[in-house]
Length: 226
Image (tube, rainbow, N blue to C red; front, side, top):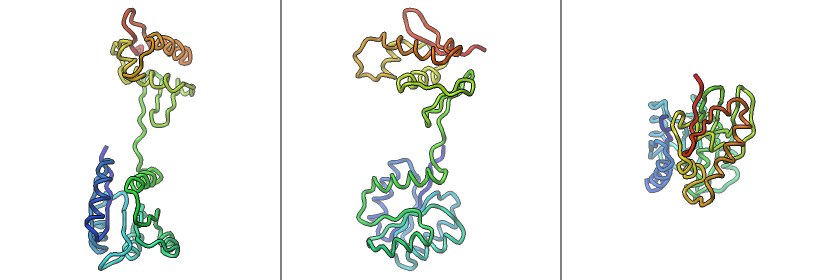
């Protein structure tokens, strides 16, 4: 999946670098503008900008003017940054179609979290992670499983166990491997806990529970009948 592109607009290079570094760490692609005119030009040239982080106080064209120009042609999400905590500024921002308003100084981590939340709301969130096999649909994003279109209720460990089996379809998995992956390396309990979970998982899956094959003396294998 291609990285989402964020336009960061601020006349302070130090501030741009701070914001860019945190966004890049969160796997975003970042382009920068040092003033309002450059920001509008960049936005018009690049059709892949998913969100704009926009400072209010800038030379040539301030944040409000940039916002007005962009709103004439696009509904791209905009986060406004300002050193002023004036309520009138905030209300003006929302009137112009600003999605979020953050006063300086701010936590870069909070800014990134706001960016991610806005992108999810605007349909730019991560694609759903779905595994399908033999009438079983496991949605890792929504943490849901359906068997032949009917939802089944699984505990957290049962869900993780089924996901691991489906991701390794046709591969023989030892109990040690399953413990390490699903229960993590710090689990010191009895490996028979896997057998107990597999038994419950099979019963909840009905006939599809037969897809989980026992390999005697070793572990299990998920295999769909052709």
